[in-house]
Image 1 (cartoon, one colour):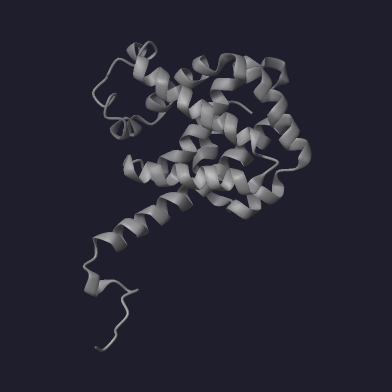
Image 2 (cartoon, one colour; image 1 turned 180 degrees about the horizontal axis):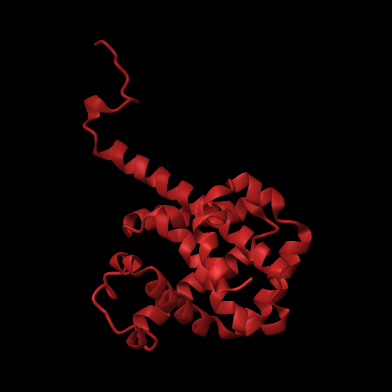
Length: 197
């Protein structure tokens, strides 16, 4: 139930289960558990966002390469007061809040996450990093939720993050394919119709 297990989940559980499998396993009870816990987490979203990213850079320093503003920052303690990191943490927390609100409306959640994945293509943020954020979020919220944190709640959050990250990966791959298609010369495009004049 601790952070060590959550960190392992980024490599195993998050990566192995398929999107449909995750959606099918998110029960009404799990959705309610996530929503109830979010009400507590929401009071500390700025704090959670910062903790999440500082931990991300501690556990996966290679992730800093994606964030050009933080790439050269060696002193992770300085990041705790960094305005840009705080702003990015709040954007991520806002996305998590929107995801939680859409757990009852999977089509809307899918559209949101796929679009975020497409935008991450343009930020040069590859999908291999997405699941790390979920694992670090879980570690960051455990102390806030205290005795409310259970193995069942952890599993619910892991399932939600696995679902969302798989949708983001889909969006990233769609945008990557679209960009490759756009950079091909017109004669090399597979959709080019050969018509005789």
